[in-house]
Length: 348
Image (cartoon, rainbow, N blue to C red; front, side):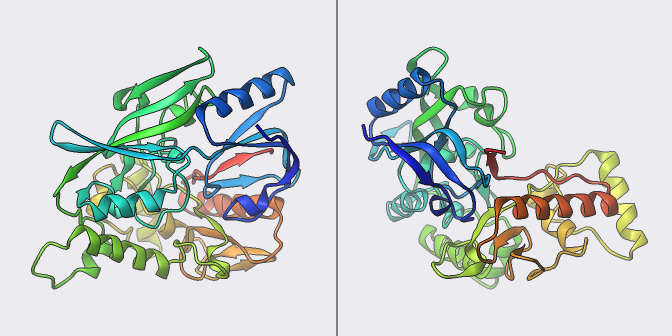
């Protein structure tokens, strides 16, 4: 096991900000994961588990302990109860796995195409987009339980998935290291065309789009919003969608509707959001004065996607944080709603 010192973390994230890790280990096996944990404990070091770095903001001071990068690889495939179950190592690239599943005509994650990051990160925040979320297909999660010191299998219900949450980022935060995720996909299943962007893309089609056509559509839509990583594109230097779509109570929804009506605005309504009384965070941000392309020093809003805070070049984590707080405060002042960030913040 190779232990590196003072490794810059900014290049390992899509936002490209942040300082170095005091110690850095890349683990390619479950045994190396255990050895890294033992090293951190023996040195009394705080440690952080790094995946693809796509949903992460690292402080300018960096991380004072050990950063453990999960590089476990391998995908196995079996059939169970009419489903194709893919056992995917946590270090595998998420979009490459989606491409493999679609190529094998297995439905359930085609709308999650183009999302950067690794497989191990998907259960943590119950990654979702365009009407699908990984909780729909996760069968089990293999973990290293740091509390009990052993590998365990957590079934779907054990993970307590909800909108952008699970036990991994709430009640059991820091207890588990994800080693593998098992997805149960429907062989020969139909594409899920639920969100407005996809319905618009396929408007006029007489046949149900294939999984491959749906994957391509999602990737094109994400590319137009700079949510598909393209080297050299400034608008791709982001942590993805920076804010969650708020889930409102009936009273909050009524208050928002009243505030919007006073400004002669109508709160956008989509069936996929209405089911949980979710509101578009992008609409709230844009109608609080932060339109696409807005710039504040070395940070700003993507020219293609209102929810993406971008690093316009050599920005600091402190600048990103200050800009995030400025948006949150303005939205709260105007609409009475507090926006929750999606990325993980470390070292602050």
